[in-house]
Image (tube, rainbow, N blue to C red; front, side, top):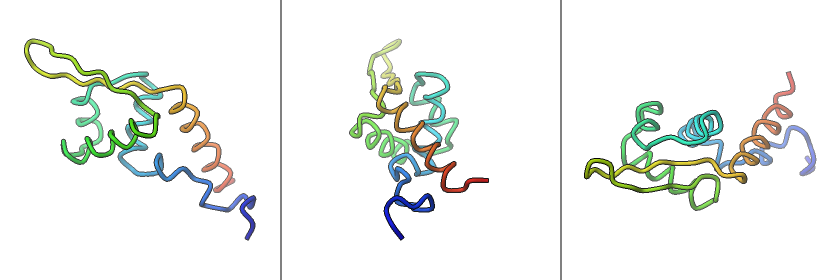
Length: 101
């Protein structure tokens, strides 16, 4: 099978394909930004698990984070980047091509 085959699953971005990261990316594409607590509530992930997935997305440049204190409590908000939006759209296109219903 050639790299160009429409059924080549290797074309799917495995960074986005993770269930938690896909959920995070979907939320951020729709809302532009979200605090950690909201992402945790929506995904049902533990603090450590979510933090690990968010770090991978930050390292890839798909999202950015902003840390601040609100009422003396730390608050981290995540934002989708232009690269992240493009990666998400490409992920959806490739997935659509793969299943071609």
